[in-house]
Image 1: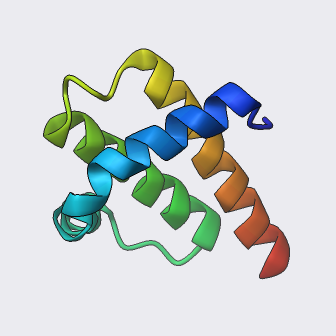
Image 2 (image 1 turned 135 degrees about the vertical axis):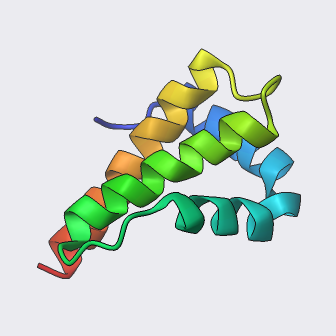
Length: 86
């Protein structure tokens, strides 16, 4: 799934809102993550848990539109990392 210009703008705007709570969001996501050996499984769990944390901490801002764009962004990050470190 590729990010179109609207997705990129949506992710960038949402990232600006959440950046002040990066430590809390990361801790929340990691606390929810199960320990896995395989990177792809672990990254999917981590990305899912980050999205859960986004929804918990920013319920008014984490709209379905933002979720779709963030999901696309994380899919692209996971693909890039798995392709690079395969």
